[in-house]
Amino acid sequence: MGKVILSCSGSGGTGKTTFAVNISAAAAKQGLSVLLLDLNMGRRNADIYLGMEDRILFDLGDVVSGLCRLDKAIISHDLCPGLSLLSCPQYREIEGISAGHVNALYRTLRSRFDLVVVDCPVSVTGILRVFASGADAALMLTVPDFSAVRNAEALCEKLEEIGIKEIYYAINRIDRQYTDSNNVPGINFITRSINAPLVGMVSEDPLIHIANNSGIPVAFADGSDIARRFADIASRITA
Ligand SMILES: Nc1ncnc2c1ncn2[C@@H]1O[C@H](COP(=O)(O)OP(=O)(O)OP(=O)(O)O)[C@@H](O)[C@H]1O
Ligand SMILES: [Mg+2]
Image (cartoon, rainbow, N blue to C red; front, side):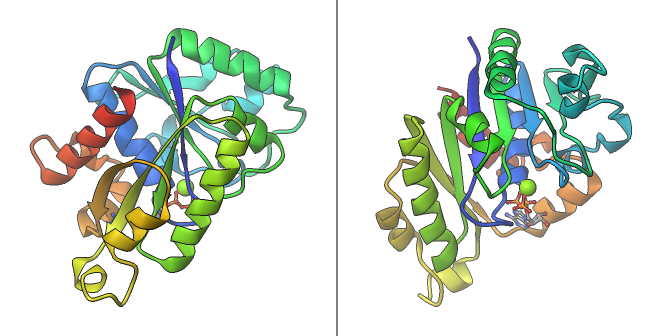
């Protein structure tokens, strides 16, 4: 049975999509069959970070409305066949999706993939709460900002309340120039604040920003330090 992991955070722009894409890519390179499920309804962008935006004909909204079968909406990556993407609609919310749909979807995906990484929007309300509560684990992203750390703590508590037992976090966009000078929360402050295991730290790095825009995940850059970092995180959360 596959494992469903949320890539989530209490604040916008912390790296949820960057991590969802690169952890999925790293896990697929490690031999797992991986599905990235983009739940940013009306604001999806995992397809851009994966360089797959021109290949999406159908999305989860089309599956829910009965326009196509699930198979038609799942597309595999050209450079890495073990990595697949299921997008949500680009310009609208999915209407008429129920808890029954979510549970049936997760059942099918768990039977077909070793790992399902869910790229979440910031808000975990409404139907997203149903998607979240059906997951097995959550990777909480934070950046070295007091506001992001506080919001991550709050979302960890909320996820515990809705029954997610396995919650870990990663710190993204670390710039030692600031974290070491106490102008922004340091690593020690963050690790004391968030009551979950730390599974990885990623620096502020223009290569990540460029990779997201070029559609070739940094996790594909064999032998690079950044690729190794994402590979380590993927190994820790799938162990
Ligand atoms: N470690 C990093 N170094 C440099 N740029 C980064 C890093 N992580 C993410 N970014 C950039 O920061 C921006 C936000 O990243 P991303 O889209 O992954 O965040 P998000 O949490 O998914 O945002 P949203 O809340 O809008 O969904 C993007 O432009 C991305 O390229
Ligand atoms: Mg995002």
